[in-house]
Image (tube, rainbow, N blue to C red; front, side, top):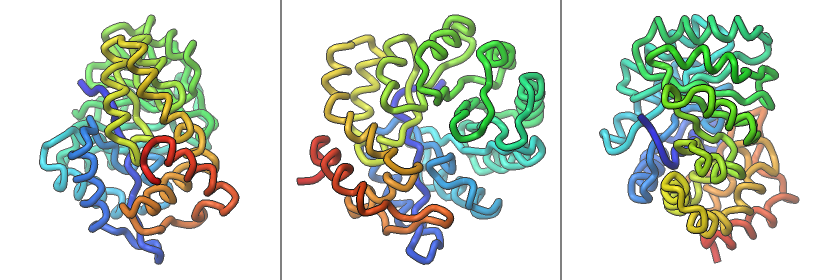
Length: 292
């Protein structure tokens, strides 16, 4: 249903932490012109933990309106409360989103059965395509391949963003679920290999700053052109590494500000990128052809 380079879009903010919808429009046009295959709105990179519910829904609605059907919009609507995830998913569907991205519940540490029941309940409650999102490094909750396989039988659960970076884990899910569930990378450094194994794309941080190259690399990898995909991915390797020198989205927001696409705004408790990491990231941007 969805494939290719799907940008985990930042939520632009001014220095006073207010939302910057003018910059959001600029980013949407940047991605349309660059060939990005889908926008993921208000996920981890979009600072969902520090947006209140009204802001969360407004950013999704505005993104859908700005895209104007030119690419799919996938709305981040996950929560550690099942009822809240249902409410956010309903709002996203009403706003015209094409799908929802639902992170595993964080902090409260559900069992595998609890995870199954959580996602099953959301899928039964909201008739929109849904993509599971497993990122145990952030959530302290790891959804096992056996649970993913159970959920793959639910018709509107269409994919999983597997962000462990563990290619063997991805292989297990691909083999277990076959055509019943699409697998997307959630780790830029390993996504090329995942797509060559049969994954359908990546929900990417790197795509924020280098969307054209990420799109081209994804198309090559999905087509099975390993040499071409490697050649396209190699200049991006520094971005894959140094865009995570501090917690995402700290580095990528700094990089976008350096490119003049957004103002340097981010919400506490996150802060702008430390001085000690800026030189490395700037060098990675230069190697990727983004700056002089």
